[in-house]
Image 1 (cartoon, rainbow over the protein chains, first blue to last red):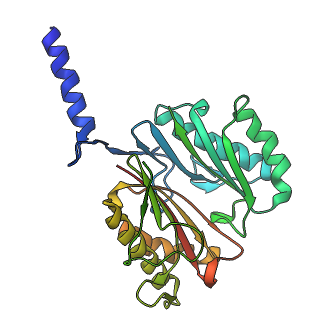
Image 2: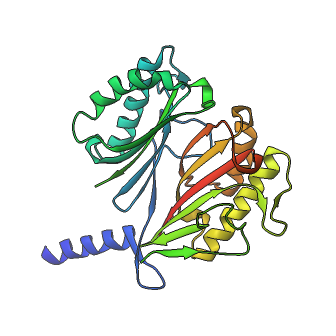
Image 3: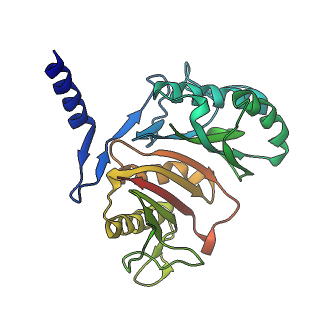
Length: 151
Length: 125
């Protein structure tokens, strides 16, 4: 029984971790995807490597329809962070594990409204962040947010 | 221990930054613009040609550091105009056919040396 358990653990370690040429531990790159959020563009919703999770920039696409939602900056920010939360959950992480976000806005006048929604998703010990206005975002979005999480 | 990566197979930095920095199995590659390392100039005029040069520069830096495209976990694509998105994606996808990195992409007001595209890259072993 005990030896079976040890064998199982050893097999799991062999599958998930392999050693590099110089003996350093190498972790496999794991693609995190939600079946209903596929953009058809060449990126993964998130990549997990060891204890780190890199979440792609999310825009306000409704995962049911694959289309941008109707609505202003507040509605879009809610959709963006719901999408992010779903991806983070699928990877086995939580919003509390997010250490850094980048917030891209098409107009810096959206900053206050975006923040009022954003703060409800990160009510305490919010991640480090940078935010700025860009010239344009994919799909005509008003806001895009990416994240790095570590646990 | 922080290791600065330097190769002649990718363009020299155009400002006070390193081509890449590696530490503890993580590689942070500076945003690459489509400078041909042999001439030190941007020669390609199309978005497809510029994207291909950027990816070649990233490939050279990855190789110098002992990494490959399959180790890349995150890209950030900065475009001069959102209308370039589709053609950029077509070339980008040639270099990342599977297990594609997480990514953020957006259009900015201007890029160094008048480039149409800049791509920043993080790779992990």
